[in-house]
Length: 614
Image 1 (cartoon, one colour):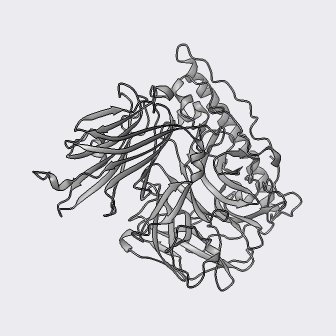
Image 2: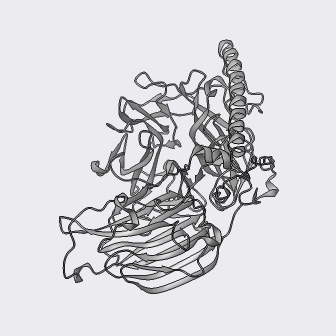
Image 3: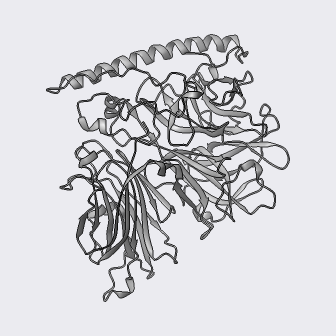
Protein backbone atom coordinates (compact mmCIF):
# COMPACT_ATOMS: atom_id res chain seq x y z
CA UNK A 1 0.00 0.00 0.00
CA UNK A 2 1.35 3.41 -1.01
CA UNK A 3 2.70 5.60 1.78
CA UNK A 4 0.75 8.85 1.72
CA UNK A 5 3.54 10.72 3.48
CA UNK A 6 5.79 11.07 0.44
CA UNK A 7 9.12 12.58 1.48
CA UNK A 8 7.82 14.02 4.73
CA UNK A 9 9.78 13.01 7.85
CA UNK A 10 8.04 10.56 10.13
CA UNK A 11 7.41 11.12 13.82
CA UNK A 12 8.73 7.73 14.95
CA UNK A 13 11.32 6.67 17.46
CA UNK A 14 13.42 3.59 16.53
CA UNK A 15 11.52 1.54 19.08
CA UNK A 16 8.13 2.52 17.65
CA UNK A 17 9.35 2.08 14.09
CA UNK A 18 10.54 -1.45 14.76
CA UNK A 19 7.35 -2.27 16.59
CA UNK A 20 5.35 -0.76 13.73
CA UNK A 21 7.00 -3.13 11.22
CA UNK A 22 6.05 -6.07 13.43
CA UNK A 23 2.49 -4.83 13.72
CA UNK A 24 2.15 -4.35 9.99
CA UNK A 25 3.50 -7.86 9.31
CA UNK A 26 1.19 -9.33 11.91
CA UNK A 27 -1.80 -7.40 10.53
CA UNK A 28 -1.11 -8.53 6.97
CA UNK A 29 -0.70 -12.14 8.10
CA UNK A 30 -3.87 -12.11 10.20
CA UNK A 31 -5.84 -10.39 7.43
CA UNK A 32 -4.71 -13.02 4.91
CA UNK A 33 -5.70 -15.84 7.27
CA UNK A 34 -9.12 -14.25 7.96
CA UNK A 35 -9.86 -13.76 4.28
CA UNK A 36 -8.86 -17.34 3.51
CA UNK A 37 -11.07 -18.68 6.31
CA UNK A 38 -14.06 -16.57 5.25
CA UNK A 39 -13.66 -17.64 1.62
CA UNK A 40 -13.53 -21.31 2.61
CA UNK A 41 -16.52 -20.87 4.91
CA UNK A 42 -18.63 -19.23 2.17
CA UNK A 43 -17.57 -21.91 -0.33
CA UNK A 44 -18.60 -24.71 2.03
CA UNK A 45 -22.00 -23.07 2.59
CA UNK A 46 -22.62 -22.77 -1.13
CA UNK A 47 -21.51 -26.33 -1.89
CA UNK A 48 -23.61 -27.74 0.94
CA UNK A 49 -26.83 -26.58 -0.76
CA UNK A 50 -28.09 -28.43 -3.85
CA UNK A 51 -27.81 -26.68 -7.17
CA UNK A 52 -25.62 -23.84 -5.86
CA UNK A 53 -22.26 -22.71 -7.16
CA UNK A 54 -19.55 -20.66 -5.47
CA UNK A 55 -19.93 -16.89 -5.81
CA UNK A 56 -18.17 -15.42 -8.81
CA UNK A 57 -15.35 -12.98 -8.23
CA UNK A 58 -15.63 -9.34 -9.25
CA UNK A 59 -12.80 -7.63 -11.10
CA UNK A 60 -11.73 -4.42 -9.39
CA UNK A 61 -11.95 -1.71 -12.03
CA UNK A 62 -13.56 1.04 -9.99
CA UNK A 63 -10.79 2.10 -7.67
CA UNK A 64 -8.36 3.46 -10.23
CA UNK A 65 -7.34 7.08 -9.99
CA UNK A 66 -9.33 9.05 -12.58
CA UNK A 67 -8.50 12.44 -14.03
CA UNK A 68 -10.65 15.48 -13.41
CA UNK A 69 -11.88 15.38 -17.01
CA UNK A 70 -13.71 12.11 -16.34
CA UNK A 71 -16.27 13.62 -13.96
CA UNK A 72 -19.08 13.12 -13.35
CA UNK A 73 -19.08 9.52 -14.62
CA UNK A 74 -20.88 6.71 -12.75
CA UNK A 75 -18.29 4.15 -11.74
CA UNK A 76 -20.37 0.98 -11.91
CA UNK A 77 -23.71 -0.38 -12.90
CA UNK A 78 -26.28 -1.09 -10.22
CA UNK A 79 -25.36 -4.24 -8.37
CA UNK A 80 -21.93 -4.30 -9.97
CA UNK A 81 -20.31 -4.94 -6.61
CA UNK A 82 -22.64 -7.77 -5.62
CA UNK A 83 -21.49 -11.34 -6.23
CA UNK A 84 -23.72 -13.88 -7.93
CA UNK A 85 -25.10 -15.51 -4.79
CA UNK A 86 -27.24 -18.51 -3.97
CA UNK A 87 -30.03 -16.38 -2.52
CA UNK A 88 -31.22 -14.45 -5.57
CA UNK A 89 -32.85 -11.77 -3.47
CA UNK A 90 -29.47 -10.74 -2.01
CA UNK A 91 -28.42 -9.28 -5.35
CA UNK A 92 -31.49 -7.03 -5.31
CA UNK A 93 -30.56 -5.42 -2.00
CA UNK A 94 -27.92 -3.11 -3.44
CA UNK A 95 -29.17 0.46 -3.64
CA UNK A 96 -29.43 2.38 -6.90
CA UNK A 97 -28.95 6.00 -5.80
CA UNK A 98 -27.73 5.95 -2.18
CA UNK A 99 -24.02 6.43 -1.59
CA UNK A 100 -22.11 3.19 -1.09
CA UNK A 101 -18.77 1.79 -2.27
CA UNK A 102 -18.76 -0.92 -4.89
CA UNK A 103 -17.83 -3.57 -2.36
CA UNK A 104 -16.78 -4.29 1.23
CA UNK A 105 -17.54 -2.69 4.58
CA UNK A 106 -18.34 0.99 5.17
CA UNK A 107 -19.29 2.87 8.32
CA UNK A 108 -19.00 6.48 9.55
CA UNK A 109 -19.04 9.39 7.09
CA UNK A 110 -15.94 11.53 7.68
CA UNK A 111 -14.69 14.95 6.62
CA UNK A 112 -17.38 16.07 4.16
CA UNK A 113 -16.50 19.37 2.52
CA UNK A 114 -16.61 21.43 -0.66
CA UNK A 115 -13.32 22.25 -2.38
CA UNK A 116 -12.66 23.89 -5.75
CA UNK A 117 -15.84 22.76 -7.45
CA UNK A 118 -16.20 19.31 -5.90
CA UNK A 119 -18.02 17.87 -2.93
CA UNK A 120 -15.86 15.42 -1.02
CA UNK A 121 -16.91 12.59 1.25
CA UNK A 122 -14.51 10.38 3.17
CA UNK A 123 -15.72 7.35 5.08
CA UNK A 124 -14.60 4.50 7.28
CA UNK A 125 -13.83 1.58 4.99
CA UNK A 126 -12.41 -1.93 5.06
CA UNK A 127 -10.75 -2.52 1.67
CA UNK A 128 -10.44 -6.24 2.32
CA UNK A 129 -13.84 -7.57 3.40
CA UNK A 130 -17.53 -6.89 4.02
CA UNK A 131 -17.02 -6.88 7.80
CA UNK A 132 -15.50 -4.28 10.11
CA UNK A 133 -11.69 -4.24 10.35
CA UNK A 134 -8.53 -2.74 8.83
CA UNK A 135 -10.24 0.65 8.86
CA UNK A 136 -9.03 3.25 6.36
CA UNK A 137 -10.38 6.53 4.99
CA UNK A 138 -11.89 5.95 1.55
CA UNK A 139 -12.64 8.99 -0.59
CA UNK A 140 -15.19 9.92 -3.26
CA UNK A 141 -16.05 13.17 -5.05
CA UNK A 142 -19.12 14.61 -6.74
CA UNK A 143 -20.32 17.68 -8.57
CA UNK A 144 -23.89 17.40 -7.32
CA UNK A 145 -23.96 15.23 -4.15
CA UNK A 146 -25.85 12.59 -6.18
CA UNK A 147 -23.41 11.11 -8.70
CA UNK A 148 -20.22 9.98 -6.99
CA UNK A 149 -16.85 8.82 -8.25
CA UNK A 150 -14.38 6.90 -6.03
CA UNK A 151 -10.73 7.87 -5.70
CA UNK A 152 -7.80 6.03 -4.15
CA UNK A 153 -7.78 5.54 -0.39
CA UNK A 154 -6.98 8.83 1.32
CA UNK A 155 -5.57 7.58 4.65
CA UNK A 156 -4.38 4.11 5.62
CA UNK A 157 -3.03 2.67 8.92
CA UNK A 158 0.69 2.91 8.19
CA UNK A 159 2.21 4.56 11.32
CA UNK A 160 2.48 3.46 14.92
CA UNK A 161 -0.06 6.10 15.98
CA UNK A 162 -2.79 4.67 13.69
CA UNK A 163 -1.57 1.10 13.24
CA UNK A 164 -4.87 -0.40 14.37
CA UNK A 165 -7.08 1.88 12.31
CA UNK A 166 -7.58 5.33 10.85
CA UNK A 167 -10.78 6.16 12.69
CA UNK A 168 -13.29 8.97 12.41
CA UNK A 169 -12.58 12.67 12.20
CA UNK A 170 -13.38 15.86 10.35
CA UNK A 171 -12.18 18.29 7.73
CA UNK A 172 -11.74 22.02 8.27
CA UNK A 173 -11.29 24.50 5.42
CA UNK A 174 -9.12 27.36 6.70
CA UNK A 175 -9.68 31.01 5.72
CA UNK A 176 -6.95 30.76 3.08
CA UNK A 177 -8.84 27.86 1.48
CA UNK A 178 -6.49 25.13 2.68
CA UNK A 179 -8.22 21.99 3.96
CA UNK A 180 -6.97 20.14 7.04
CA UNK A 181 -8.04 16.71 8.28
CA UNK A 182 -8.05 15.81 11.97
CA UNK A 183 -8.70 12.15 12.74
CA UNK A 184 -8.39 9.56 15.50
CA UNK A 185 -5.76 6.88 15.14
CA UNK A 186 -5.86 3.70 17.15
CA UNK A 187 -2.20 3.13 17.98
CA UNK A 188 -0.17 -0.07 18.07
CA UNK A 189 -1.11 -0.27 21.77
CA UNK A 190 -4.81 0.57 21.16
CA UNK A 191 -4.48 4.12 22.49
CA UNK A 192 -6.74 6.65 20.79
CA UNK A 193 -4.66 9.56 19.49
CA UNK A 194 -5.56 12.65 17.44
CA UNK A 195 -3.64 13.21 14.23
CA UNK A 196 -3.53 15.60 11.31
CA UNK A 197 -3.17 15.24 7.54
CA UNK A 198 -2.92 17.88 4.81
CA UNK A 199 -3.21 17.73 1.01
CA UNK A 200 -0.03 17.05 -0.91
CA UNK A 201 -1.16 19.26 -3.80
CA UNK A 202 -3.53 22.16 -3.09
CA UNK A 203 -3.94 22.79 -6.82
CA UNK A 204 -5.61 19.40 -7.26
CA UNK A 205 -9.38 19.94 -6.86
CA UNK A 206 -9.82 16.22 -6.23
CA UNK A 207 -7.36 16.23 -3.31
CA UNK A 208 -6.13 12.78 -4.31
CA UNK A 209 -3.10 12.59 -2.01
CA UNK A 210 -2.89 13.36 1.70
CA UNK A 211 0.20 13.68 3.87
CA UNK A 212 0.29 12.92 7.59
CA UNK A 213 2.23 15.67 9.37
CA UNK A 214 5.50 14.78 11.15
CA UNK A 215 4.19 16.24 14.44
CA UNK A 216 1.64 13.43 14.85
CA UNK A 217 0.20 12.50 17.22
CA UNK A 218 -1.15 15.97 17.98
CA UNK A 219 -3.15 15.00 21.07
CA UNK A 220 -3.11 12.14 23.59
CA UNK A 221 -5.83 11.31 26.14
CA UNK A 222 -5.74 13.71 29.12
CA UNK A 223 -5.20 12.23 32.60
CA UNK A 224 -8.88 11.85 33.46
CA UNK A 225 -9.81 10.09 30.22
CA UNK A 226 -9.27 6.42 29.40
CA UNK A 227 -6.94 5.45 26.57
CA UNK A 228 -9.87 4.06 24.57
CA UNK A 229 -12.33 6.86 25.41
CA UNK A 230 -10.94 9.76 23.37
CA UNK A 231 -12.01 10.00 19.74
CA UNK A 232 -13.57 11.68 16.70
CA UNK A 233 -12.46 15.35 16.57
CA UNK A 234 -15.00 17.82 15.18
CA UNK A 235 -14.59 20.37 12.45
CA UNK A 236 -12.64 23.28 13.96
CA UNK A 237 -14.28 26.66 14.50
CA UNK A 238 -12.65 30.08 14.82
CA UNK A 239 -13.76 32.40 17.62
CA UNK A 240 -13.43 36.15 18.13
CA UNK A 241 -10.26 35.72 20.22
CA UNK A 242 -8.47 34.47 17.10
CA UNK A 243 -8.14 30.91 18.40
CA UNK A 244 -9.44 27.75 16.76
CA UNK A 245 -11.33 25.18 18.78
CA UNK A 246 -12.28 21.56 18.32
CA UNK A 247 -14.32 19.19 20.43
CA UNK A 248 -13.51 15.51 21.04
CA UNK A 249 -15.87 12.86 22.40
CA UNK A 250 -15.00 11.15 25.68
CA UNK A 251 -16.41 9.81 28.92
CA UNK A 252 -15.61 9.78 32.64
CA UNK A 253 -17.15 6.73 34.24
CA UNK A 254 -20.64 6.65 32.75
CA UNK A 255 -20.77 10.40 32.07
CA UNK A 256 -20.56 11.24 28.40
CA UNK A 257 -18.82 14.49 27.55
CA UNK A 258 -17.26 16.69 24.89
CA UNK A 259 -13.78 18.06 25.55
CA UNK A 260 -12.60 21.33 23.98
CA UNK A 261 -9.08 22.09 22.74
CA UNK A 262 -7.88 25.43 21.37
CA UNK A 263 -4.98 26.43 19.12
CA UNK A 264 -3.65 29.27 17.00
CA UNK A 265 -1.78 27.14 14.46
CA UNK A 266 -3.27 23.59 14.54
CA UNK A 267 0.03 22.31 15.95
CA UNK A 268 0.08 23.38 19.61
CA UNK A 269 -3.16 22.56 21.41
CA UNK A 270 -4.39 23.46 24.89
CA UNK A 271 -7.18 21.66 26.74
CA UNK A 272 -9.82 24.10 28.02
CA UNK A 273 -10.74 23.84 31.66
CA UNK A 274 -14.44 23.63 30.85
CA UNK A 275 -16.09 20.82 28.96
CA UNK A 276 -18.21 21.84 26.02
CA UNK A 277 -20.96 19.80 27.66
CA UNK A 278 -21.54 16.58 29.62
CA UNK A 279 -24.52 14.44 30.62
CA UNK A 280 -24.43 11.82 33.36
CA UNK A 281 -25.37 8.24 32.50
CA UNK A 282 -25.02 8.59 28.71
CA UNK A 283 -21.75 6.69 28.33
CA UNK A 284 -19.18 7.27 25.60
CA UNK A 285 -19.86 10.12 23.18
CA UNK A 286 -18.69 9.39 19.65
CA UNK A 287 -18.72 11.53 16.50
CA UNK A 288 -19.54 14.76 18.32
CA UNK A 289 -20.82 17.53 16.04
CA UNK A 290 -21.30 21.21 16.89
CA UNK A 291 -22.64 23.99 14.68
CA UNK A 292 -24.84 27.12 14.61
CA UNK A 293 -28.32 27.46 13.11
CA UNK A 294 -30.05 30.69 12.17
CA UNK A 295 -33.04 32.01 14.11
CA UNK A 296 -34.13 34.24 11.26
CA UNK A 297 -33.63 32.39 7.99
CA UNK A 298 -33.36 29.10 6.15
CA UNK A 299 -29.71 29.35 5.13
CA UNK A 300 -26.95 27.41 6.83
CA UNK A 301 -24.13 29.01 8.79
CA UNK A 302 -20.37 28.58 8.80
CA UNK A 303 -19.37 27.99 12.43
CA UNK A 304 -16.26 30.15 12.01
CA UNK A 305 -18.14 33.15 10.62
CA UNK A 306 -20.84 33.66 13.23
CA UNK A 307 -20.98 37.31 14.31
CA UNK A 308 -21.16 38.21 18.00
CA UNK A 309 -24.64 39.75 17.79
CA UNK A 310 -26.01 37.38 15.18
CA UNK A 311 -29.32 35.70 16.05
CA UNK A 312 -28.34 32.05 16.26
CA UNK A 313 -28.77 28.92 18.28
CA UNK A 314 -26.25 26.11 18.51
CA UNK A 315 -26.76 22.41 17.95
CA UNK A 316 -24.73 19.82 19.82
CA UNK A 317 -24.92 16.23 18.61
CA UNK A 318 -23.38 13.09 20.07
CA UNK A 319 -23.54 9.49 18.87
CA UNK A 320 -24.03 7.35 21.97
CA UNK A 321 -21.88 4.25 21.86
CA UNK A 322 -24.07 2.49 24.44
CA UNK A 323 -27.27 2.45 22.37
CA UNK A 324 -26.05 3.42 18.88
CA UNK A 325 -28.37 6.41 18.48
CA UNK A 326 -27.61 10.00 17.43
CA UNK A 327 -29.02 12.57 19.85
CA UNK A 328 -28.99 16.32 19.44
CA UNK A 329 -30.01 19.29 21.53
CA UNK A 330 -30.48 23.00 20.79
CA UNK A 331 -29.08 25.71 23.03
CA UNK A 332 -26.71 28.62 23.52
CA UNK A 333 -22.93 28.78 23.54
CA UNK A 334 -20.30 31.10 25.03
CA UNK A 335 -17.43 29.18 26.61
CA UNK A 336 -19.56 26.10 27.09
CA UNK A 337 -22.87 24.82 25.73
CA UNK A 338 -26.15 25.14 27.63
CA UNK A 339 -29.27 23.38 26.30
CA UNK A 340 -32.47 25.40 26.16
CA UNK A 341 -34.46 22.51 27.59
CA UNK A 342 -32.62 20.18 30.01
CA UNK A 343 -35.32 17.54 29.49
CA UNK A 344 -34.23 17.36 25.84
CA UNK A 345 -30.51 17.06 26.55
CA UNK A 346 -28.18 14.56 24.85
CA UNK A 347 -29.50 11.04 25.44
CA UNK A 348 -32.82 12.29 26.80
CA UNK A 349 -34.68 13.97 23.97
CA UNK A 350 -34.35 14.56 20.26
CA UNK A 351 -32.73 12.29 17.71
CA UNK A 352 -31.82 12.97 14.10
CA UNK A 353 -33.49 9.75 13.08
CA UNK A 354 -35.62 7.23 14.96
CA UNK A 355 -34.60 4.23 12.88
CA UNK A 356 -31.35 2.76 11.61
CA UNK A 357 -28.99 5.74 11.66
CA UNK A 358 -25.68 6.45 13.43
CA UNK A 359 -22.32 8.27 13.47
CA UNK A 360 -23.62 11.23 11.47
CA UNK A 361 -21.64 14.25 10.33
CA UNK A 362 -22.64 17.67 8.98
CA UNK A 363 -20.78 20.21 6.89
CA UNK A 364 -21.40 23.73 5.64
CA UNK A 365 -21.89 24.05 1.88
CA UNK A 366 -20.59 27.53 0.95
CA UNK A 367 -21.96 27.33 -2.58
CA UNK A 368 -25.63 27.07 -1.62
CA UNK A 369 -25.26 28.35 1.96
CA UNK A 370 -26.75 25.29 3.60
CA UNK A 371 -25.84 22.77 6.26
CA UNK A 372 -25.90 19.19 5.05
CA UNK A 373 -26.16 16.02 7.13
CA UNK A 374 -24.72 12.60 6.30
CA UNK A 375 -25.60 9.49 8.31
CA UNK A 376 -24.39 5.90 8.30
CA UNK A 377 -27.02 3.17 7.87
CA UNK A 378 -25.80 -0.28 8.84
CA UNK A 379 -27.29 -3.54 7.63
CA UNK A 380 -30.11 -5.36 9.44
CA UNK A 381 -29.39 -8.77 7.96
CA UNK A 382 -26.75 -11.26 9.09
CA UNK A 383 -23.00 -10.91 8.73
CA UNK A 384 -23.03 -14.08 6.64
CA UNK A 385 -25.44 -12.41 4.19
CA UNK A 386 -23.08 -9.42 3.97
CA UNK A 387 -20.15 -11.70 3.19
CA UNK A 388 -22.20 -13.46 0.51
CA UNK A 389 -23.24 -10.25 -1.22
CA UNK A 390 -19.78 -8.71 -0.78
CA UNK A 391 -20.74 -5.38 0.78
CA UNK A 392 -22.25 -3.83 3.89
CA UNK A 393 -23.81 -0.44 4.72
CA UNK A 394 -24.99 2.66 2.91
CA UNK A 395 -25.14 6.37 3.68
CA UNK A 396 -28.44 8.21 3.85
CA UNK A 397 -29.41 10.66 1.16
CA UNK A 398 -27.71 13.93 2.19
CA UNK A 399 -30.18 16.08 4.12
CA UNK A 400 -30.41 19.83 4.60
CA UNK A 401 -30.79 21.00 8.19
CA UNK A 402 -32.52 24.17 9.42
CA UNK A 403 -34.02 25.23 12.73
CA UNK A 404 -37.79 24.86 12.93
CA UNK A 405 -38.82 28.50 13.26
CA UNK A 406 -42.28 27.52 14.52
CA UNK A 407 -40.87 25.85 17.63
CA UNK A 408 -37.30 27.13 17.88
CA UNK A 409 -36.45 23.86 19.60
CA UNK A 410 -35.97 21.24 16.89
CA UNK A 411 -34.45 20.81 13.45
CA UNK A 412 -36.15 20.22 10.12
CA UNK A 413 -34.49 17.72 7.77
CA UNK A 414 -35.16 17.30 4.07
CA UNK A 415 -33.45 15.47 1.20
CA UNK A 416 -31.18 17.76 -0.84
CA UNK A 417 -33.02 19.20 -3.84
CA UNK A 418 -30.49 17.62 -6.24
CA UNK A 419 -32.14 14.26 -5.58
CA UNK A 420 -35.15 15.41 -7.59
CA UNK A 421 -33.02 15.31 -10.75
CA UNK A 422 -33.44 11.52 -10.62
CA UNK A 423 -37.22 11.68 -10.77
CA UNK A 424 -38.79 10.07 -13.83
CA UNK A 425 -42.33 8.84 -14.58
CA UNK A 426 -44.91 10.19 -12.16
CA UNK A 427 -48.23 8.90 -10.83
CA UNK A 428 -50.67 11.29 -9.12
CA UNK A 429 -53.77 10.36 -7.11
CA UNK A 430 -56.08 12.76 -5.29
CA UNK A 431 -58.99 12.78 -2.86
CA UNK A 432 -59.39 9.11 -2.07
CA UNK A 433 -61.64 8.21 0.87
CA UNK A 434 -60.21 5.27 2.79
CA UNK A 435 -62.91 3.58 4.85
CA UNK A 436 -61.95 1.50 7.83
CA UNK A 437 -60.12 -1.61 6.64
CA UNK A 438 -59.47 -0.21 3.15
CA UNK A 439 -56.53 -1.37 1.04
CA UNK A 440 -56.02 0.43 -2.31
CA UNK A 441 -53.29 -0.55 -4.75
CA UNK A 442 -51.67 2.43 -6.49
CA UNK A 443 -51.57 1.49 -10.15
CA UNK A 444 -48.46 2.53 -12.05
CA UNK A 445 -46.39 2.94 -8.90
CA UNK A 446 -44.65 -0.44 -8.78
CA UNK A 447 -40.89 -0.58 -8.33
CA UNK A 448 -38.00 -0.63 -5.88
CA UNK A 449 -36.76 2.90 -6.67
CA UNK A 450 -39.36 5.48 -5.69
CA UNK A 451 -39.79 8.98 -4.31
CA UNK A 452 -43.24 9.28 -2.71
CA UNK A 453 -45.04 12.27 -1.23
CA UNK A 454 -48.46 11.86 0.37
CA UNK A 455 -50.77 14.00 2.49
CA UNK A 456 -53.78 12.93 4.52
CA UNK A 457 -56.48 15.21 5.83
CA UNK A 458 -56.21 15.46 9.59
CA UNK A 459 -59.34 13.75 10.89
CA UNK A 460 -61.99 15.72 12.74
CA UNK A 461 -61.66 14.08 16.15
CA UNK A 462 -64.49 16.22 17.57
CA UNK A 463 -67.13 14.41 15.51
CA UNK A 464 -66.78 11.18 17.45
CA UNK A 465 -69.97 10.19 19.27
CA UNK A 466 -68.01 8.07 21.73
CA UNK A 467 -64.46 8.89 22.73
CA UNK A 468 -61.97 6.02 22.45
CA UNK A 469 -60.09 4.56 25.36
CA UNK A 470 -57.42 6.93 26.62
CA UNK A 471 -54.08 5.23 26.14
CA UNK A 472 -50.53 5.45 24.93
CA UNK A 473 -49.69 3.80 21.62
CA UNK A 474 -46.35 2.08 21.05
CA UNK A 475 -45.48 1.17 17.47
CA UNK A 476 -43.98 -2.16 18.47
CA UNK A 477 -47.13 -3.40 20.22
CA UNK A 478 -48.56 -4.76 16.97
CA UNK A 479 -47.30 -2.57 14.20
CA UNK A 480 -49.68 -1.85 11.33
CA UNK A 481 -51.95 -4.71 12.46
CA UNK A 482 -52.95 -2.97 15.71
CA UNK A 483 -56.35 -1.41 14.96
CA UNK A 484 -57.47 1.81 16.56
CA UNK A 485 -60.00 4.56 15.91
CA UNK A 486 -57.80 6.76 13.72
CA UNK A 487 -55.09 4.51 12.46
CA UNK A 488 -53.01 2.87 11.50
CA UNK A 489 -53.29 4.57 8.08
CA UNK A 490 -50.58 5.30 5.54
CA UNK A 491 -48.59 3.48 2.88
CA UNK A 492 -47.34 0.01 2.15
CA UNK A 493 -44.19 -0.02 0.02
CA UNK A 494 -42.08 -2.86 -1.32
CA UNK A 495 -45.26 -4.90 -0.99
CA UNK A 496 -46.05 -8.18 -2.73
CA UNK A 497 -49.40 -8.49 -4.50
CA UNK A 498 -50.61 -10.93 -1.85
CA UNK A 499 -49.05 -8.75 0.91
CA UNK A 500 -46.93 -11.57 2.34
CA UNK A 501 -44.14 -9.00 2.19
CA UNK A 502 -44.79 -5.35 2.97
CA UNK A 503 -43.17 -2.40 4.68
CA UNK A 504 -45.79 -0.20 6.32
CA UNK A 505 -45.21 3.49 7.11
CA UNK A 506 -48.20 4.96 8.88
CA UNK A 507 -49.84 7.35 11.34
CA UNK A 508 -51.74 6.41 14.48
CA UNK A 509 -53.75 8.91 16.54
CA UNK A 510 -54.48 8.30 20.21
CA UNK A 511 -56.25 10.16 22.98
CA UNK A 512 -54.05 10.69 26.00
CA UNK A 513 -55.30 10.78 29.59
CA UNK A 514 -54.89 14.58 29.58
CA UNK A 515 -57.49 14.77 26.81
CA UNK A 516 -54.99 15.66 24.09
CA UNK A 517 -54.87 13.84 20.76
CA UNK A 518 -51.36 12.89 19.78
CA UNK A 519 -49.90 11.57 16.54
CA UNK A 520 -47.47 8.68 16.31
CA UNK A 521 -45.66 7.76 13.09
CA UNK A 522 -44.22 4.28 12.62
CA UNK A 523 -42.10 2.31 10.14
CA UNK A 524 -42.95 -1.37 10.44
CA UNK A 525 -40.28 -3.85 9.32
CA UNK A 526 -41.99 -6.86 10.92
CA UNK A 527 -43.53 -8.11 7.65
CA UNK A 528 -40.95 -6.68 5.26
CA UNK A 529 -39.30 -9.96 4.31
CA UNK A 530 -39.73 -13.72 4.26
CA UNK A 531 -35.99 -14.07 4.81
CA UNK A 532 -34.70 -15.40 8.12
CA UNK A 533 -32.23 -13.82 10.51
CA UNK A 534 -33.06 -10.18 9.86
CA UNK A 535 -34.06 -7.33 12.17
CA UNK A 536 -37.84 -6.87 12.34
CA UNK A 537 -37.98 -3.84 14.63
CA UNK A 538 -40.97 -1.51 14.35
CA UNK A 539 -39.58 2.02 14.65
CA UNK A 540 -41.62 5.02 15.68
CA UNK A 541 -41.90 8.43 17.30
CA UNK A 542 -44.69 10.63 18.65
CA UNK A 543 -44.67 14.02 16.92
CA UNK A 544 -46.04 17.42 17.83
CA UNK A 545 -48.13 18.40 14.84
CA UNK A 546 -48.09 22.18 14.33
CA UNK A 547 -51.53 23.48 15.36
CA UNK A 548 -51.87 25.30 12.03
CA UNK A 549 -51.46 22.08 10.02
CA UNK A 550 -54.76 20.47 9.00
CA UNK A 551 -52.93 17.61 7.30
CA UNK A 552 -50.44 14.85 7.97
CA UNK A 553 -47.66 14.31 5.44
CA UNK A 554 -45.00 11.75 4.59
CA UNK A 555 -42.19 11.62 2.11
CA UNK A 556 -40.64 8.20 1.48
CA UNK A 557 -37.39 7.57 -0.36
CA UNK A 558 -37.44 3.90 -1.38
CA UNK A 559 -34.26 2.34 -2.75
CA UNK A 560 -34.32 -1.48 -2.77
CA UNK A 561 -33.21 -2.25 0.79
CA UNK A 562 -33.64 1.15 2.44
CA UNK A 563 -36.70 3.27 3.18
CA UNK A 564 -36.12 6.82 4.45
CA UNK A 565 -39.22 8.51 5.88
CA UNK A 566 -39.59 12.27 6.39
CA UNK A 567 -42.56 13.25 8.54
CA UNK A 568 -44.53 16.50 8.41
CA UNK A 569 -42.04 18.38 6.24
CA UNK A 570 -39.06 17.03 8.17
CA UNK A 571 -39.84 17.40 11.86
CA UNK A 572 -38.92 13.72 12.31
CA UNK A 573 -37.18 11.03 10.25
CA UNK A 574 -37.17 7.24 10.35
CA UNK A 575 -34.78 5.08 8.32
CA UNK A 576 -35.37 1.36 7.88
CA UNK A 577 -33.42 -1.43 6.20
CA UNK A 578 -35.67 -4.04 4.60
CA UNK A 579 -34.88 -7.13 2.55
CA UNK A 580 -37.83 -8.33 0.46
CA UNK A 581 -37.38 -11.67 -1.27
CA UNK A 582 -40.31 -11.51 -3.73
CA UNK A 583 -41.49 -7.87 -3.58
CA UNK A 584 -38.65 -6.78 -5.87
CA UNK A 585 -38.63 -4.34 -8.80
CA UNK A 586 -41.83 -4.87 -10.87
CA UNK A 587 -43.18 -7.16 -8.18
CA UNK A 588 -42.83 -4.46 -5.52
CA UNK A 589 -46.05 -2.48 -5.21
CA UNK A 590 -47.46 0.53 -3.34
CA UNK A 591 -50.75 0.47 -1.43
CA UNK A 592 -52.73 3.07 0.47
CA UNK A 593 -54.29 1.55 3.56
CA UNK A 594 -56.44 2.40 6.55
CA UNK A 595 -56.62 -0.22 9.26
CA UNK A 596 -58.46 2.05 11.67
CA UNK A 597 -62.18 2.10 12.40
CA UNK A 598 -62.87 5.63 11.16
CA UNK A 599 -62.53 6.86 7.58
CA UNK A 600 -59.47 8.81 6.45
CA UNK A 601 -59.12 11.03 3.38
CA UNK A 602 -55.96 10.85 1.34
CA UNK A 603 -55.63 14.30 -0.21
CA UNK A 604 -52.68 14.02 -2.60
CA UNK A 605 -50.31 11.21 -3.55
CA UNK A 606 -47.36 11.66 -5.91
CA UNK A 607 -45.05 8.77 -6.81
CA UNK A 608 -41.96 9.20 -8.97
CA UNK A 609 -39.84 6.42 -10.43
CA UNK A 610 -36.19 7.12 -9.59
CA UNK A 611 -33.22 6.66 -11.91
CA UNK A 612 -30.03 4.87 -10.89
CA UNK A 613 -26.75 6.69 -10.38
CA UNK A 614 -24.53 3.60 -10.58
